[in-house]
Length: 177
Image 1: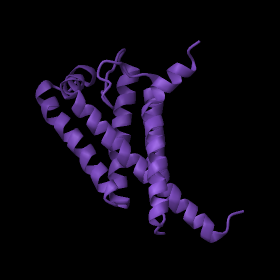
Image 2 (image 1 turned 90 degrees about the vertical axis):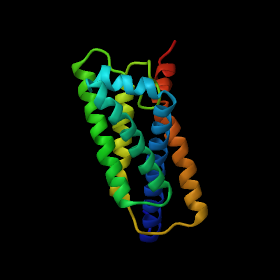
Image 3 (image 1 turned 30 degrees about the vertical axis):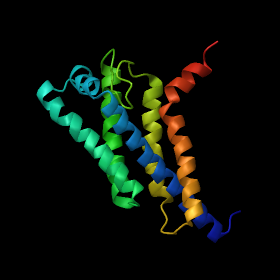
Image 4 (image 1 turned 135 degrees about the vertical axis):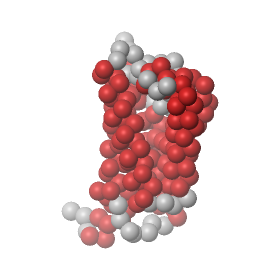
């Protein structure tokens, strides 16, 4: 059984990992969209039914929101940017799931994969990301961690981020013969 002090430190450590993970995921998503920006904007219109004029406004707004939230979180933001991230990611996941189950082919360009259609692994990835974001609130502590512990949390978050973004590829390779 963990002592109350160790339990508090562990919760703070795990919440820091979640915060950095969400920040890095948002940063990767915005960079991925910027790398294939034209395809991303076109996918908003073709896969999500957004009129082209609205897509030309929605695309930069979404990229800017992701970049802004990532920067805020990396600069030390906690409760409010995590809540806004949860709202953004939850909404995007719900819309993506709805389109996935009501249309035959959906391309979202979530992390720059403009030509690959959304798979069940992409939906699982998004649900995991929302879960990580929500777990932050279950774990959030006001305990301040040392610089070394914070760097360790950021490093572990980077590993989780890469694995989460690559979930489709990992799952596809794992089931290949």
